[in-house]
Image 1: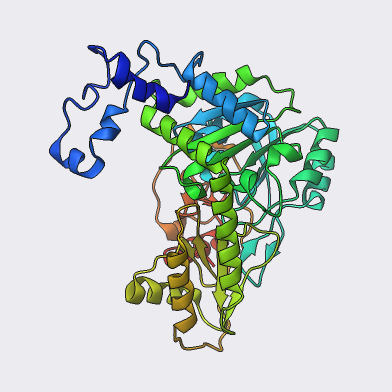
Image 2: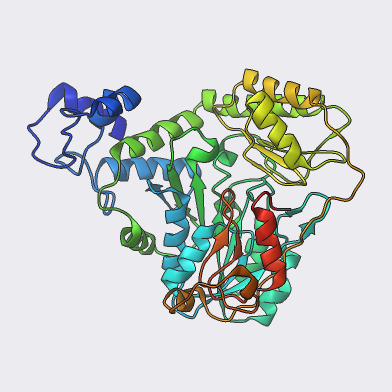
Length: 447
């Protein structure tokens, strides 16, 4: 039986007198403001682990059935519901694979959740930078060649963590990277938070676990239409990681009161994505975006590499794109996902209508702006020197100092800009002038 049907049947057949949490008693009490905003149905679907329902920590009933269904759809050995976002999945994957002092190879353009996982596991990161595209001011997807030498030089690496697609939508060569790491008995964890639609439509690549990744994590709320923070986690059929290790890791970090409305939303989202209507919706979205891209004026350049076609990454020639973002925000009430001096990023998904897309492209094509001949200053990132591991730094005593006195000090705080949540500097790393310059520039933009 499904979670959605079980909730519906509760009110049809076996409504009980509950003296359990949550204390609103399925909507018997709802503050008026909450009722006006959320409606009664949200509260009526909000249960705890009562008789006939299930427990996310050790599923044996409707949650287990749903996870089996999802596993079949995604061709995984086991799939897990996440009601605390992809962040919880990334951390759980690291807890399941890494021990204190284990070395883990990580692309620096990772989400801040990887740092959280490093603090909790005590693992030692070996950071690397993917190839940098100076024209766009972004990091490209990771290729086998990017990590081959690092793996050869560090024979004791236990895992590799990659983000694919990246925040900007660029894919890594997961298939060949997977073959490489398996030769060295290294686990591959892929943060696919932005790649939740890949399984259901005509994309340029396949889901990571089908290319050999051991674990992948996907956010259903980013592009697939689910509410924040719905996500799922997959264990590959080809991995030797026991599914019990993943469950135990999730139990360490998850709440003991998971949200039934969110679990029902995960079920409804995947039911739709895997249907013919859902697949057609995604393919139609991609077709419409590709068509509109072809009709951009000569001042607009569209990124067209090995990337997610639902991400619209573009730049306006000979100008600071932050200025274009300000025009869009203030004059047209259009807000981009992220912008830098080099580019604008617009995220689309299952809920992006044709009218919405038409409005965006119509607007960007008519924007008038002053071209600038001067070169836009860009700060290419330099990997900081690690003095302490993230876990060591977390438990160290620290003190505040003025930024002008911070050079050559060891950072006690994580500095990042949201979005995208990619760390500029991590606790335990030496602060240099280049990092302070980048932080200063990040007050307005990251270039």
